[in-house]
Amino acid sequence: MCEAETPDFRIAGLLARIISELSEANEKLELLISLNRKLLQNQEKLRQTSDKIKSSEEFEFAPDVMALLSLPMSLRKTVMVLYKLEKATAKDIAKETKRLRAVESASANRLVRLGYLTKKREGRDVYFCIQPQVEVTE
Amino acid sequence: MSIKTISVHSSRGGTGKTVIATNLAAILANKGFTVALLDLDFRAPSLAMVFSEGIKLPVKCWLNDFLNGKCDGAQVFTDVSGRYNLKGKLLIGLANPAIDAMRNVMEKSRAWEVTAVKKLFSLISILNDTKVDFLVSDTSPGMQYSSVNAIVSSDISIMVTTLDSIDLKGTEDMLSELYDALEKKAVILANKASPETRIKSTKYNMNVADKLEKILKHPVIGVIPCYCDVLQSERTSLLAVEKPNHPFVKNLAEVAEKLEKGYLI
Image (cartoon, rainbow over all chains, first blue to last red; front, side, top):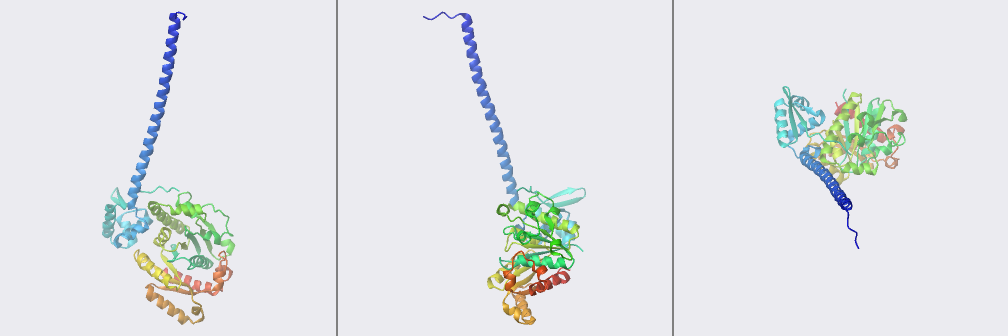
């Protein structure tokens, strides 16, 4: 025969159930937080991969020495000078190639349109360079 | 005087590029010049073996490390002049002969190659600032990134060829489709020419040179006969130092003279 439950006993039972349910909820919350953290990590990895893919697509235009051979003769010299000078104005390039500044300006701007070079204004001068700069990693 | 850069190249392997590059560098250094010798054959580096007795291996900075941004250009070179008692200076920059390093270079992207050629130019600039007179680069045969990078950054290339018809055809193609396309100066050096070339008079040599010039449409800087003792000698021996009166060395000294006083002026 069961003993009649006293009010204190019932309250204690109720509290135990509340604690147990809170504990379960807490576990579920921790799981959710952990999942959220993993999601954020994956999101970051995806972003990095997407950047890498984007930059490797950009490098399809990397003016390496083999790409030089597919360029018109007039543009090759300009790129070869920029290997050496890193960044240069049309006047700097002309000094090396011994061609007219206007010829070098036209060549360099054509290479910019083809995606092989970038240009940047610094004061009155416009500088051309092989871009984007590549991270050297092993 | 600014630095003069020479690359030693060939259309195929086995023409004697490395022997020519190392001895040419030693001949120039023995004339009192400061010479840097660079191993740009990353797929089959051999200078580390040639000079292994003169340096502590592994070196503190391989050329590969420099191109990978791991060390400065000045750290690439080791001075081996003392070992050979040369009148001038001989500095060597070595490619890493470890299999991993070779594989690593083969896996590089096109973007990395752009950086590599720019770094090569920066290395030349460093050598120029440190008053180096000549840079001699030993390259990979054929059309590899490292060899084309060397050609692009050199004042002149020596195309080494044997008189074998396959070699000559490869040289002809390389000259017209690579050197002429890039408007780069190249001279021909026929090596391992048949024994008759040695026995016959200088006139015969001239004939060989004339014929080669007609076929290849580029100047011939020399015709070096085939010497069995050169072929059989240890790769670590530097004939220009050990046997300065050997006809192979004498022939190569003439090439050095022509470069110094003719083609590189």
